Image 1 (tube, helix red, strand yellow):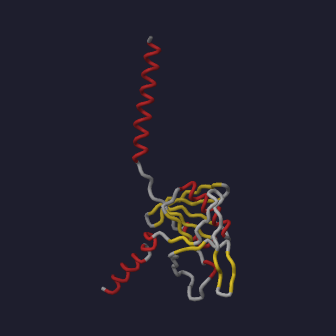
Image 2 (cartoon, helix red, strand yellow):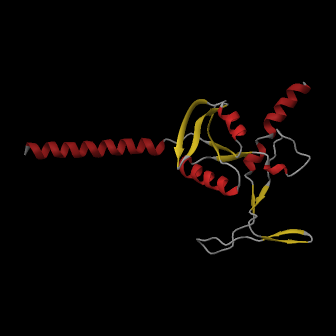
Image 3 (cartoon, one colour):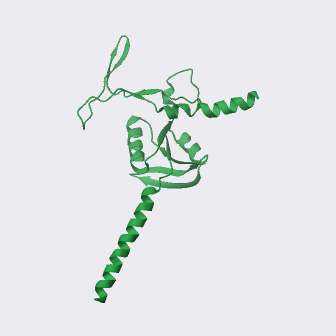
Length: 180
């Protein structure tokens, strides 16, 4: 009889502990994370050198540096060159860190001679350009088929409006201080 009462108390205690801990964990929202990826060693090293509370994690052989940059929780990783490497690293990053946004730093192949190193370029939309036909009027994009749904994937993706607004905010504050 005593053993069964002890067992009941242990079971009830375990259930109570599980429920109280589970509700606390469900209510706690994780801190937002920004992912910063780059193809070149120097770009990534420059940002990593500014991290506070830096910790390193390796996932599938890729090194991710976690820490704080300007007070914000960030994870930084080197993708290497090319879209396949970038896609692989980005996929691992999203799967393991669940970021709120992902930023890619790089020179974008120096696509525009009017753009200099250090300029910030933000795409209003991006294109999935693996498939297309080069015609006299330029490249005509074709979407690719989604392997899961067998439907045509979109060719163009619009940027998050919230992210489009971010870069101009510090510039406006800085310009207003200079003009005042």
